[in-house]
Image 1 (cartoon, rainbow, N blue to C red):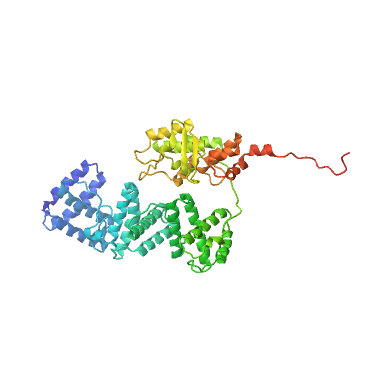
Image 2: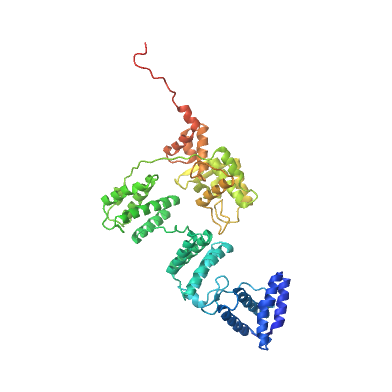
Length: 537
């Protein structure tokens, strides 16, 4: 770079800073300390025309003075930024300088910034290079539709910290064990109240994404395992993955059922490991039976579902030649079920919840339409979030779907209020998209909203409406419970109730009888006096 006059560049830069709205304090800091220290240094040497190399040498000298404790970090930052601003002005004629790259004490120069720099060609060709790995993760996050703000949280509070720790230890290559140590250290600080939960979560998520990218070359957007969650033995883990992939691919189980089954099968694995087993080699029917018997003691509810999950898993192993013997024969087919039915929302609670969404916003229109549809049809959350345009016959005012849980068709009338709410969302609030689903997520990549988010939005409005109750586990499904109870109270026959709720068996509708208090009262037998034998004539 050619030389330029130091004093002229400083005065013109200060004027540009003032015109751009910089505060008087900022301008004074540059004049007295930033530019001032530079001008005084070169004036003592009798030099006024400088170039970039001369300023870089001066900055390196000042860094040595700073590290020796001769002046504060504030002055060091201002001197360094003043030098970069002068070079920037000489090159561009502007004073619009962005953030500076972090200073690397080991390399004694600014290091690459994960926010400002791209990897070099050499780094991109090295599969172990950490800087390139971080860059790939960022590109995948942005490609998936995450906002720049969200990506920056993962970068600043996660990947940058991991990069800095590697650099401090002289490592340019990714170390998964070092990343795990950093997460464990921040976890400890979080448990002691020394850092926030959000900062800890961003770091842990960033560490998880880096590890996944390193191992697989890509990232998936799933819930990361709970902290400290125990993992089964490697062979057990591989068999469980094969089972879940097959169940999802073939559709023999609904997606939500696969997740439930996975949890129960993991519990079965841990019972086997407690008996010294880490594989199915040589395992007997009697051993499986004993394991299931002991496993049952863990469950106060949901045992029927757990036993079913283990049985179909063991059958999967036999049918796919993972075990020579059909171990599912050791698992009982019949388990006494304990049916629990919790009350749904009352009429007043439903009205309060439907008053909460802000219908002036896109998200409010979506949430209102989803809750109203469930309240008026009793549809499950999984069927609401998977509802497609083609599922609604607007002329016949009907909804025709294949239920996610039972895989059976269901036709329901579409009430005018629900229809109008859905139409309002489609016409005035839904993002432009070729996706067939009606209800979309409004943050990040365009995708259908999921069951978890549907339940979370009801929880959000419960808090806003300040609806408190002793009834546990209230959420989106409470609209369905309220719908079934309301049908019974209107003396709808049980068979018709089963059809409207889309139940496969009549027994599935019976629990709704338990909450129809008024109906139960009419069935109660009156008390009759007790008379002794011989009292009658």
